[in-house]
Image (cartoon, rainbow, N blue to C red; front, side, top):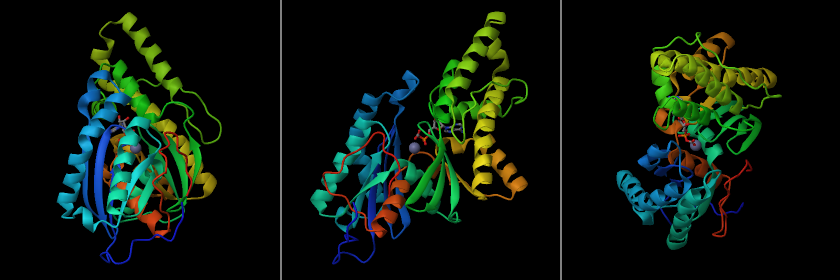
Length: 348
Ligand code: KG4
Ligand code: ZN
């Protein structure tokens, strides 16, 4: 909702925003003062490890337990009291509905109690705007490959609040493909970082996995997961300890196949849009082989590549604060009736 509600006059001249992120399995709170992050506290939930994936109800309960201490810590680290806040922000979606509701209800009550503007932030937009937390900032227009446990998108970013999805996954996200494959290998959740670590000692050329071709700039990662499962079954029939004996090569081959898929469409998008300013966001951007490959493409194609610091790649509230800053500046403020939306799409 657009209004003329930029920070209430009469308060401090600085703009201080408290933001909360609770869309999946990390409870996070951050304080931003005049576009500078003063604190960014993240409580990760270990309760899901033994289930091999995020259990939505357990995530909601853990958010409820974490939200007060996490906000207190963020305020304390920033040396800011609640009465100094100019605005509060929460993740509206996309994400797990119950998890989103914990953050939104809490932040709405803060907005009401403190009588400050309320901002609702799109989680995917925030991942992209994380690039503006620290220099060097990407120049508009740029392309952002957003790769996480829940999403895989190529986004054309024309301005802070003007984004267009050019392509996205039709089924699993690439992080999910990493995690589900890791589970088949008996690795702990989340498996992406384990595959990354093991792949470092493996031969990426020994095994490769067939994939589904998708039209235009879209992705599909469910086919490669099935191909991987069938490959393991077949090899284990021949040699029961196949995984144990070949783990680094298996991980390196899988990782290379997934990165090839990501890069093929990204290169295509860059060519189509004639854009060389390329950014990457989301948890999977922590992958060392993906980072290396991006740098390699950058050298070959004259790309300017932007990768945020790791703590701003994974889910965090600093990126929610950054997005809230841009929304507040543009005059967007929400009423208390604003709803969370588990399937939220881009809109200004
Ligand atoms: O953005 P994020 O923290 O949360 C979501 O919004 O999903 O991303 C989490 C995803 C998980 O799938 C995790 O396995 C993956 O990021 N991930 C990695 C690496 N680090 C995290 N995948 C591959 N290699 C990594 N080094
Ligand atoms: Zn995320």
